[in-house]
Length: 260
Ligand SMILES: Nc1ncnc2c1ncn2[C@@H]1O[C@H](COP(=O)(O)OP(=O)(O)OP(=O)(O)O)[C@@H](O)[C@H]1O
Image (cartoon, rainbow, N blue to C red; front, side, top):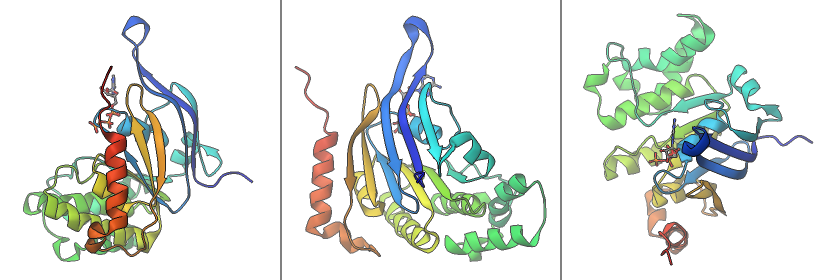
């Protein structure tokens, strides 16, 4: 039977050509199970964002194949199976939170109005806890709230797969903890397949079923680690020995190795 989920085989990505060519990803194989929460964890510049874009059909690989539920990734894009949450929320400043939350679905369906659009946007805002801020403009929102609108905007598309490119990287530690709790709840409610880019070890352990650890030069998967912590996870999980063992192991994996 065809693998249900995201499968990458022999993915390679080069930028430029000739003497100035740079290989960013090489020999990369990956399987992501449907309905799982999967993180791509690695140091800055190892190619996490590039891989995320390739998995979501935003960029093409120089070599190799990506399939989603057994079809080529380009076909999955046409079937609107992806929702993207970028690093920066990039909300339209003259539109309210609710109008921003509607926007991608309006573009995808090429309709301005419709009961499904209203319902999906309202439900998505509710899921991220922003019903009461629905009529606020972006400048009236905190950084964390703006990121939640960005998540709602992708959720309103009701995609099978959510691609999240380090969405909480710019937030302070306390807001980031809150956002991680909120995201874990949203995931438990929707059971979307989530591919989440981060370079935070605690964030990856807290959220994930599986962490793919990436190495650099060229970017590749160096370890795939299953996180066997019970759900629902609360912030207390950070203090458990199992959590700390996972974190210590990952820290060791990601330590810059001494060059002889
Ligand atoms: N369009 C491009 N042209 C040339 N090089 C690129 C391009 N996009 C990315 N790169 C290079 O590819 C490498 C991987 O970049 P990428 O953004 O995927 O890494 P990352 O792991 O997501 O980094 P960060 O955590 O800092 O966001 C970097 O060395 C980057 O300079």
